[in-house]
Length: 350
Figure 1: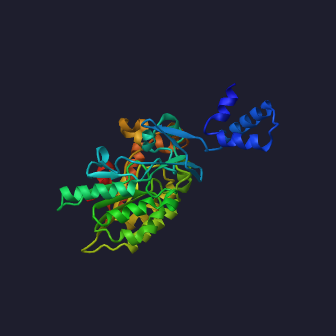
Figure 2: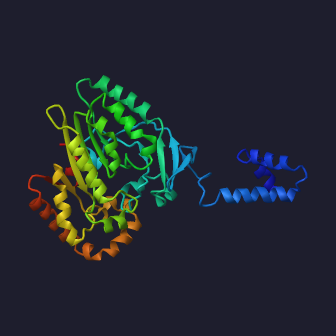
Figure 3: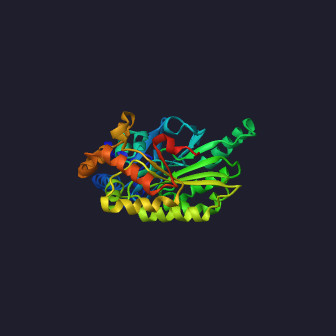
């Protein structure tokens, strides 16, 4: 009898005991119905209780629900990974989390999901690297022993946002900063979250630091289409302003700030000039065209969702190259004292 096996499965054993204890005279059919009903309710699409994924032959179950996201916890084998490709200027990349709750429609990082189903569900799950602090300490100690006169360069983060919503609870990125500041690496932080201002007290202790705030468009209506879960544009601009005014830049602190307009999304014509003017607070603006338009190697990382949204903005994308070049020219004209860089070149520290 299949339902008996279900009841005796360790996952449901305790529930079966409770049901049996409540009434010794429950008929078999009643017990069967109760168990199956409970099973269907808790395995429904709206409940994360038993959603799971497999990682190197280990089954990882949902730890909790945070907002709309299923939260998992897993141990990382390493936290400092060799930087390659677009950010090979650095020694390492550091990603405190896997997955990103912002779930931006165009994000290439979705391609690095554990499986196809989770890639389709990008933005609705996040994996906490629960041993990240301990691993980072060991790896930085190892580096220091081999390179006593050289600090590593670290890019945080390449395939997640270190300040996504779960960070407000876990404070994992903050704890990693507390480890790193002892070793004084050259550190670049890439985020779209104003939450980074929470850590000003630690950030102002770094001697070589660049903070990149991602703001792909100057139009809120466009942001809401392409990245509806991300912080508003005014919130990001206010955050980068707060960072600039509260983190020292002097002979002992080489601190720099960028706004990365990557990929460049449409900007409504009547909002473009005002947006550009607000970027004069940073020392660098980085621009890059939409992934699938320029680099075939990134097409796989740009989800169909973004391609569909692009159709709404045909007025921009039908002349994408022209609009891109015109925007670049306006940046150069309106921001004469700000460094304007494109693509890979803009993501280096220097």
